[in-house]
Length: 411
Image 1 (cartoon, rainbow, N blue to C red):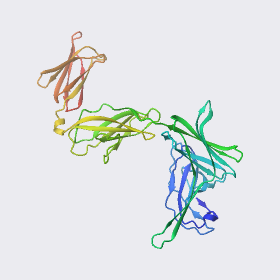
Image 2 (image 1 turned 90 degrees about the horizontal axis):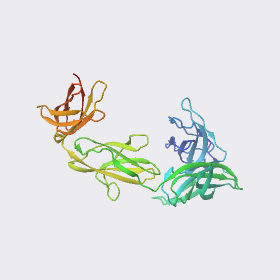
Image 3 (image 1 turned 45 degrees about the vertical axis):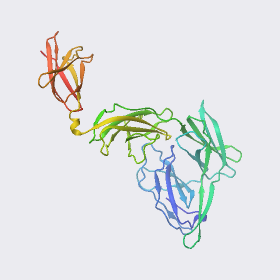
Image 4 (image 1 turned 45 degrees about the horizontal axis):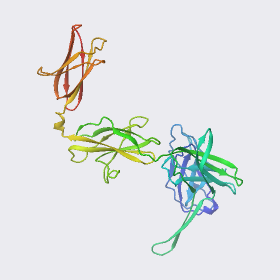
Protein backbone atom coordinates (compact mmCIF):
# COMPACT_ATOMS: atom_id res chain seq x y z
CA UNK A 1 0.00 0.00 0.00
CA UNK A 2 1.26 3.51 -0.80
CA UNK A 3 0.41 7.01 0.39
CA UNK A 4 1.71 10.58 0.40
CA UNK A 5 2.54 11.58 3.97
CA UNK A 6 0.64 14.64 5.15
CA UNK A 7 2.60 17.90 5.09
CA UNK A 8 2.67 18.18 8.88
CA UNK A 9 4.17 14.72 9.13
CA UNK A 10 6.46 14.80 6.09
CA UNK A 11 9.58 14.75 8.21
CA UNK A 12 8.35 11.90 10.40
CA UNK A 13 11.27 9.78 11.50
CA UNK A 14 9.36 6.55 12.01
CA UNK A 15 6.29 4.70 10.83
CA UNK A 16 4.93 2.08 13.22
CA UNK A 17 2.89 -0.10 13.15
CA UNK A 18 0.26 -0.40 10.39
CA UNK A 19 -2.50 -2.83 11.35
CA UNK A 20 -4.72 -4.44 8.74
CA UNK A 21 -8.08 -5.03 10.37
CA UNK A 22 -11.12 -6.77 8.83
CA UNK A 23 -14.38 -4.87 9.15
CA UNK A 24 -16.41 -7.75 10.53
CA UNK A 25 -17.09 -7.95 14.25
CA UNK A 26 -15.46 -9.04 16.42
CA UNK A 27 -12.51 -6.82 15.53
CA UNK A 28 -9.57 -8.99 14.47
CA UNK A 29 -6.08 -7.80 13.58
CA UNK A 30 -4.70 -10.05 10.87
CA UNK A 31 -1.34 -8.37 10.27
CA UNK A 32 0.88 -5.77 11.87
CA UNK A 33 3.86 -4.14 10.20
CA UNK A 34 6.51 -3.67 12.84
CA UNK A 35 9.71 -3.18 10.89
CA UNK A 36 9.20 0.07 8.99
CA UNK A 37 11.36 2.94 10.24
CA UNK A 38 12.35 5.58 7.74
CA UNK A 39 12.63 9.32 7.13
CA UNK A 40 10.50 10.30 4.16
CA UNK A 41 11.63 13.42 2.27
CA UNK A 42 8.90 16.00 1.84
CA UNK A 43 6.71 15.26 -1.17
CA UNK A 44 7.93 11.69 -1.61
CA UNK A 45 6.04 8.45 -1.24
CA UNK A 46 6.55 5.91 1.52
CA UNK A 47 5.75 2.37 0.42
CA UNK A 48 4.26 0.01 3.03
CA UNK A 49 3.68 -3.64 2.17
CA UNK A 50 1.89 -6.42 4.05
CA UNK A 51 2.51 -9.94 2.75
CA UNK A 52 1.32 -13.49 3.43
CA UNK A 53 -2.02 -12.36 4.89
CA UNK A 54 -4.16 -15.27 6.08
CA UNK A 55 -7.94 -14.79 6.18
CA UNK A 56 -9.92 -17.26 8.25
CA UNK A 57 -12.83 -19.20 6.79
CA UNK A 58 -15.89 -16.98 6.74
CA UNK A 59 -13.93 -13.80 7.49
CA UNK A 60 -15.18 -10.61 5.84
CA UNK A 61 -12.94 -9.67 2.93
CA UNK A 62 -13.87 -5.99 3.29
CA UNK A 63 -11.72 -4.34 5.97
CA UNK A 64 -9.53 -1.43 6.98
CA UNK A 65 -5.83 -0.65 7.06
CA UNK A 66 -4.56 1.74 9.74
CA UNK A 67 -1.20 3.48 9.95
CA UNK A 68 0.18 5.04 13.14
CA UNK A 69 2.88 7.62 12.51
CA UNK A 70 5.01 8.99 15.34
CA UNK A 71 2.33 8.28 17.93
CA UNK A 72 -0.52 9.61 15.77
CA UNK A 73 -3.04 6.75 15.85
CA UNK A 74 -4.62 6.08 12.46
CA UNK A 75 -2.84 8.95 10.72
CA UNK A 76 -4.14 7.24 7.60
CA UNK A 77 -7.19 5.01 7.24
CA UNK A 78 -7.61 2.89 4.12
CA UNK A 79 -10.49 0.77 2.90
CA UNK A 80 -9.26 -2.64 1.72
CA UNK A 81 -10.83 -5.58 -0.05
CA UNK A 82 -8.56 -8.42 1.05
CA UNK A 83 -7.80 -10.95 -1.68
CA UNK A 84 -7.50 -14.58 -0.62
CA UNK A 85 -5.20 -15.23 -3.55
CA UNK A 86 -3.65 -13.50 -6.54
CA UNK A 87 -1.57 -10.37 -6.96
CA UNK A 88 -1.17 -7.32 -4.71
CA UNK A 89 -4.09 -5.03 -3.94
CA UNK A 90 -4.08 -1.26 -3.41
CA UNK A 91 -6.05 0.15 -0.46
CA UNK A 92 -8.28 3.19 -0.97
CA UNK A 93 -7.98 6.09 1.47
CA UNK A 94 -11.07 6.42 3.68
CA UNK A 95 -12.35 10.00 3.88
CA UNK A 96 -15.95 9.51 5.04
CA UNK A 97 -16.95 9.95 8.71
CA UNK A 98 -16.61 6.64 10.54
CA UNK A 99 -16.93 5.29 14.06
CA UNK A 100 -15.74 2.06 15.67
CA UNK A 101 -15.77 0.92 19.27
CA UNK A 102 -13.23 -1.34 20.95
CA UNK A 103 -14.28 -3.05 24.18
CA UNK A 104 -13.90 -6.46 25.84
CA UNK A 105 -16.46 -9.14 25.04
CA UNK A 106 -16.32 -10.38 28.65
CA UNK A 107 -15.67 -8.26 31.77
CA UNK A 108 -16.28 -8.10 35.50
CA UNK A 109 -18.78 -5.49 36.74
CA UNK A 110 -17.14 -2.31 38.00
CA UNK A 111 -16.99 1.48 37.74
CA UNK A 112 -14.36 1.48 35.00
CA UNK A 113 -15.62 -0.46 31.99
CA UNK A 114 -13.34 1.13 29.39
CA UNK A 115 -14.61 1.66 25.84
CA UNK A 116 -12.24 3.03 23.19
CA UNK A 117 -13.90 5.11 20.47
CA UNK A 118 -12.20 5.32 17.09
CA UNK A 119 -13.55 8.35 15.25
CA UNK A 120 -12.25 9.39 11.83
CA UNK A 121 -13.19 12.37 9.65
CA UNK A 122 -15.92 13.56 11.99
CA UNK A 123 -17.75 16.72 10.79
CA UNK A 124 -17.25 19.99 12.67
CA UNK A 125 -19.17 20.17 15.93
CA UNK A 126 -19.82 16.43 16.04
CA UNK A 127 -19.78 14.39 19.26
CA UNK A 128 -19.77 10.74 20.27
CA UNK A 129 -22.16 9.01 22.63
CA UNK A 130 -21.55 5.61 24.23
CA UNK A 131 -24.20 3.67 26.16
CA UNK A 132 -24.56 0.41 28.04
CA UNK A 133 -27.97 -1.24 27.84
CA UNK A 134 -29.93 -4.04 26.25
CA UNK A 135 -32.46 -4.71 23.52
CA UNK A 136 -36.05 -5.02 24.68
CA UNK A 137 -38.63 -5.96 22.04
CA UNK A 138 -36.07 -5.07 19.39
CA UNK A 139 -35.43 -1.56 20.76
CA UNK A 140 -32.17 -0.59 22.45
CA UNK A 141 -32.78 0.68 25.99
CA UNK A 142 -29.74 2.49 27.42
CA UNK A 143 -29.03 2.35 31.17
CA UNK A 144 -25.77 4.31 31.25
CA UNK A 145 -24.79 6.97 28.70
CA UNK A 146 -21.69 9.14 28.34
CA UNK A 147 -21.05 11.79 25.69
CA UNK A 148 -17.71 13.19 24.53
CA UNK A 149 -16.26 15.43 21.86
CA UNK A 150 -14.79 13.70 18.83
CA UNK A 151 -11.32 15.22 19.10
CA UNK A 152 -8.56 12.90 20.27
CA UNK A 153 -6.45 13.08 23.37
CA UNK A 154 -3.15 14.88 22.78
CA UNK A 155 -0.03 14.43 24.84
CA UNK A 156 3.34 16.15 24.69
CA UNK A 157 6.17 14.73 26.79
CA UNK A 158 9.80 15.57 27.17
CA UNK A 159 12.87 14.28 29.00
CA UNK A 160 16.51 15.20 29.40
CA UNK A 161 18.86 13.27 27.15
CA UNK A 162 21.69 11.57 29.05
CA UNK A 163 25.07 13.06 28.35
CA UNK A 164 24.43 16.42 26.67
CA UNK A 165 21.29 17.29 28.65
CA UNK A 166 19.30 18.14 25.53
CA UNK A 167 15.51 17.99 25.69
CA UNK A 168 13.87 15.10 23.80
CA UNK A 169 10.21 15.67 22.94
CA UNK A 170 7.55 13.06 22.22
CA UNK A 171 4.07 13.83 20.94
CA UNK A 172 1.15 11.44 20.73
CA UNK A 173 -2.46 11.62 19.59
CA UNK A 174 -4.66 8.93 21.13
CA UNK A 175 -8.28 7.83 20.78
CA UNK A 176 -10.74 8.72 23.48
CA UNK A 177 -11.32 6.08 26.16
CA UNK A 178 -14.70 6.43 27.87
CA UNK A 179 -15.30 4.74 31.25
CA UNK A 180 -18.78 3.36 31.91
CA UNK A 181 -20.01 2.59 35.41
CA UNK A 182 -21.13 -1.04 35.22
CA UNK A 183 -20.88 -1.71 38.96
CA UNK A 184 -24.34 -3.22 39.38
CA UNK A 185 -24.76 -4.95 36.04
CA UNK A 186 -24.51 -8.71 35.47
CA UNK A 187 -25.33 -10.72 32.36
CA UNK A 188 -25.47 -10.14 28.63
CA UNK A 189 -25.62 -6.49 27.58
CA UNK A 190 -24.98 -4.32 24.53
CA UNK A 191 -22.58 -1.41 24.15
CA UNK A 192 -23.82 1.19 21.67
CA UNK A 193 -21.68 4.02 20.28
CA UNK A 194 -23.17 6.76 18.11
CA UNK A 195 -21.61 9.56 16.09
CA UNK A 196 -23.83 12.66 16.40
CA UNK A 197 -23.77 15.84 14.34
CA UNK A 198 -23.73 19.26 15.99
CA UNK A 199 -27.53 19.11 16.34
CA UNK A 200 -27.47 15.70 18.06
CA UNK A 201 -28.75 13.80 15.01
CA UNK A 202 -27.18 10.29 14.78
CA UNK A 203 -24.89 9.83 11.77
CA UNK A 204 -23.75 6.31 12.59
CA UNK A 205 -24.33 3.70 15.31
CA UNK A 206 -22.26 0.61 16.14
CA UNK A 207 -23.00 -2.14 18.68
CA UNK A 208 -21.04 -4.80 20.53
CA UNK A 209 -22.27 -7.53 22.84
CA UNK A 210 -20.59 -7.81 26.24
CA UNK A 211 -21.09 -10.34 29.05
CA UNK A 212 -20.60 -9.01 32.59
CA UNK A 213 -19.89 -11.69 35.17
CA UNK A 214 -18.76 -11.53 38.81
CA UNK A 215 -19.05 -15.23 39.64
CA UNK A 216 -16.37 -17.93 39.85
CA UNK A 217 -16.57 -21.27 38.00
CA UNK A 218 -18.91 -23.81 39.63
CA UNK A 219 -19.47 -27.59 39.77
CA UNK A 220 -15.75 -28.27 39.54
CA UNK A 221 -14.61 -31.88 39.72
CA UNK A 222 -12.24 -34.46 38.27
CA UNK A 223 -13.90 -37.01 35.99
CA UNK A 224 -13.21 -40.62 37.03
CA UNK A 225 -9.86 -39.77 38.66
CA UNK A 226 -7.39 -42.63 39.22
CA UNK A 227 -6.85 -43.77 42.79
CA UNK A 228 -3.40 -45.11 41.94
CA UNK A 229 -0.96 -44.16 39.19
CA UNK A 230 2.56 -44.99 38.10
CA UNK A 231 5.02 -42.32 39.14
CA UNK A 232 7.19 -42.82 36.03
CA UNK A 233 4.49 -41.95 33.46
CA UNK A 234 2.37 -38.87 32.71
CA UNK A 235 -0.87 -38.70 34.67
CA UNK A 236 -3.86 -38.60 32.33
CA UNK A 237 -6.65 -36.49 33.81
CA UNK A 238 -10.05 -35.08 32.94
CA UNK A 239 -11.91 -32.36 34.80
CA UNK A 240 -15.27 -30.67 34.34
CA UNK A 241 -16.77 -27.37 35.46
CA UNK A 242 -19.20 -24.65 34.47
CA UNK A 243 -19.50 -20.88 34.53
CA UNK A 244 -23.10 -19.74 34.87
CA UNK A 245 -22.92 -16.37 33.12
CA UNK A 246 -19.77 -16.35 30.99
CA UNK A 247 -17.84 -19.47 29.95
CA UNK A 248 -14.85 -21.55 30.99
CA UNK A 249 -11.89 -20.11 29.09
CA UNK A 250 -8.98 -22.20 30.42
CA UNK A 251 -8.20 -25.07 32.78
CA UNK A 252 -4.71 -25.48 34.23
CA UNK A 253 -3.53 -28.73 35.84
CA UNK A 254 -0.70 -28.85 38.37
CA UNK A 255 0.81 -30.94 41.17
CA UNK A 256 0.02 -29.65 44.64
CA UNK A 257 -2.84 -27.56 45.94
CA UNK A 258 -3.69 -23.85 45.80
CA UNK A 259 -2.42 -21.42 48.41
CA UNK A 260 -4.69 -18.49 49.24
CA UNK A 261 -6.87 -19.43 46.23
CA UNK A 262 -3.89 -19.11 43.87
CA UNK A 263 -1.46 -21.42 42.13
CA UNK A 264 1.62 -21.53 44.39
CA UNK A 265 4.60 -19.46 43.12
CA UNK A 266 7.04 -21.26 40.79
CA UNK A 267 4.61 -24.16 40.30
CA UNK A 268 4.59 -25.53 36.72
CA UNK A 269 1.11 -25.72 35.20
CA UNK A 270 -0.17 -27.53 32.14
CA UNK A 271 -2.96 -26.01 30.07
CA UNK A 272 -5.76 -28.49 29.43
CA UNK A 273 -7.61 -28.98 26.17
CA UNK A 274 -11.41 -29.04 25.83
CA UNK A 275 -12.79 -32.48 25.10
CA UNK A 276 -16.15 -31.27 23.78
CA UNK A 277 -17.38 -28.21 21.86
CA UNK A 278 -19.25 -26.98 24.93
CA UNK A 279 -15.94 -26.85 26.85
CA UNK A 280 -17.54 -28.72 29.73
CA UNK A 281 -14.76 -31.32 30.06
CA UNK A 282 -11.01 -30.63 29.80
CA UNK A 283 -8.12 -33.10 29.64
CA UNK A 284 -4.35 -33.15 30.06
CA UNK A 285 -1.46 -35.59 30.44
CA UNK A 286 0.36 -34.10 33.42
CA UNK A 287 4.11 -34.89 33.69
CA UNK A 288 5.03 -36.14 37.17
CA UNK A 289 8.14 -34.08 37.78
CA UNK A 290 10.35 -34.60 40.81
CA UNK A 291 10.75 -37.57 43.13
CA UNK A 292 7.11 -37.95 44.11
CA UNK A 293 5.78 -41.07 45.81
CA UNK A 294 2.69 -42.00 47.72
CA UNK A 295 -0.40 -39.83 48.19
CA UNK A 296 0.01 -36.69 46.06
CA UNK A 297 -2.35 -33.75 45.68
CA UNK A 298 -3.30 -32.80 42.12
CA UNK A 299 -5.30 -29.67 41.26
CA UNK A 300 -7.19 -28.18 38.35
CA UNK A 301 -7.67 -24.42 38.14
CA UNK A 302 -10.76 -23.35 36.21
CA UNK A 303 -10.63 -19.82 34.78
CA UNK A 304 -13.70 -18.24 33.20
CA UNK A 305 -13.81 -15.60 30.48
CA UNK A 306 -13.68 -12.69 32.96
CA UNK A 307 -10.63 -14.04 34.79
CA UNK A 308 -12.34 -15.43 37.91
CA UNK A 309 -10.94 -18.80 38.96
CA UNK A 310 -11.66 -21.71 41.30
CA UNK A 311 -10.07 -25.11 41.92
CA UNK A 312 -10.78 -28.82 42.11
CA UNK A 313 -8.39 -31.06 44.09
CA UNK A 314 -7.84 -34.83 44.27
CA UNK A 315 -5.26 -37.12 45.87
CA UNK A 316 -3.55 -39.77 43.74
CA UNK A 317 -1.28 -42.47 45.19
CA UNK A 318 1.88 -42.52 43.03
CA UNK A 319 3.58 -45.91 42.97
CA UNK A 320 6.68 -47.46 41.38
CA UNK A 321 6.50 -49.51 38.20
CA UNK A 322 7.12 -52.81 40.00
CA UNK A 323 4.25 -52.00 42.37
CA UNK A 324 2.00 -51.31 39.40
CA UNK A 325 2.47 -54.87 38.21
CA UNK A 326 0.67 -56.21 41.26
CA UNK A 327 -2.19 -53.72 41.32
CA UNK A 328 -5.60 -55.38 41.07
CA UNK A 329 -7.41 -55.22 37.76
CA UNK A 330 -10.90 -56.10 36.58
CA UNK A 331 -12.64 -58.40 34.11
CA UNK A 332 -15.78 -57.40 32.20
CA UNK A 333 -17.54 -60.53 30.85
CA UNK A 334 -20.27 -60.67 28.19
CA UNK A 335 -22.33 -63.85 27.63
CA UNK A 336 -23.99 -64.67 24.29
CA UNK A 337 -26.29 -67.50 23.29
CA UNK A 338 -26.50 -66.96 19.57
CA UNK A 339 -28.29 -63.62 19.19
CA UNK A 340 -29.67 -63.81 22.73
CA UNK A 341 -28.17 -62.03 25.74
CA UNK A 342 -29.25 -64.31 28.60
CA UNK A 343 -29.69 -62.65 32.02
CA UNK A 344 -29.47 -64.19 35.49
CA UNK A 345 -26.84 -66.81 34.65
CA UNK A 346 -23.94 -67.72 36.93
CA UNK A 347 -20.49 -66.77 35.63
CA UNK A 348 -17.62 -68.47 37.46
CA UNK A 349 -14.10 -67.06 37.70
CA UNK A 350 -11.21 -69.56 38.19
CA UNK A 351 -7.46 -69.01 38.34
CA UNK A 352 -4.99 -70.93 36.16
CA UNK A 353 -4.87 -73.72 38.77
CA UNK A 354 -8.61 -74.24 38.48
CA UNK A 355 -9.43 -72.72 41.86
CA UNK A 356 -12.73 -70.84 41.92
CA UNK A 357 -12.15 -67.18 42.89
CA UNK A 358 -15.58 -65.63 42.40
CA UNK A 359 -19.09 -66.12 41.01
CA UNK A 360 -21.63 -63.54 39.82
CA UNK A 361 -24.91 -63.49 37.90
CA UNK A 362 -25.32 -61.75 34.55
CA UNK A 363 -27.44 -58.61 34.44
CA UNK A 364 -30.17 -57.77 31.92
CA UNK A 365 -27.50 -57.09 29.28
CA UNK A 366 -25.87 -60.47 29.99
CA UNK A 367 -22.77 -58.84 31.41
CA UNK A 368 -20.89 -59.16 34.69
CA UNK A 369 -17.77 -57.46 36.06
CA UNK A 370 -15.24 -58.93 38.48
CA UNK A 371 -13.42 -56.22 40.44
CA UNK A 372 -10.13 -56.28 42.38
CA UNK A 373 -8.73 -59.22 40.44
CA UNK A 374 -5.09 -60.08 41.14
CA UNK A 375 -2.92 -59.99 37.96
CA UNK A 376 -2.67 -63.40 36.31
CA UNK A 377 -4.34 -65.85 33.95
CA UNK A 378 -7.96 -66.81 34.45
CA UNK A 379 -10.85 -68.77 32.98
CA UNK A 380 -14.45 -67.53 33.01
CA UNK A 381 -17.23 -70.02 32.37
CA UNK A 382 -21.02 -70.16 32.20
CA UNK A 383 -23.64 -72.93 31.98
CA UNK A 384 -27.31 -72.58 31.04
CA UNK A 385 -29.10 -75.68 32.30
CA UNK A 386 -32.40 -75.04 30.50
CA UNK A 387 -30.76 -75.33 27.06
CA UNK A 388 -27.76 -77.43 28.12
CA UNK A 389 -25.44 -74.89 26.57
CA UNK A 390 -22.14 -73.83 28.11
CA UNK A 391 -18.98 -71.95 27.28
CA UNK A 392 -15.77 -70.55 28.65
CA UNK A 393 -13.07 -68.03 27.77
CA UNK A 394 -9.45 -67.44 28.76
CA UNK A 395 -8.42 -63.99 29.96
CA UNK A 396 -5.24 -62.38 31.29
CA UNK A 397 -5.35 -59.55 33.86
CA UNK A 398 -2.48 -57.04 33.93
CA UNK A 399 -1.68 -54.90 36.94
CA UNK A 400 -4.13 -52.02 37.37
CA UNK A 401 -5.78 -52.56 33.99
CA UNK A 402 -9.27 -53.68 32.91
CA UNK A 403 -9.66 -56.85 30.85
CA UNK A 404 -12.60 -58.14 28.81
CA UNK A 405 -13.88 -61.60 27.89
CA UNK A 406 -16.77 -62.98 25.84
CA UNK A 407 -18.41 -66.35 26.52
CA UNK A 408 -20.36 -68.02 23.68
CA UNK A 409 -22.77 -70.67 24.91
CA UNK A 410 -22.80 -73.82 22.77
CA UNK A 411 -23.81 -77.48 23.09
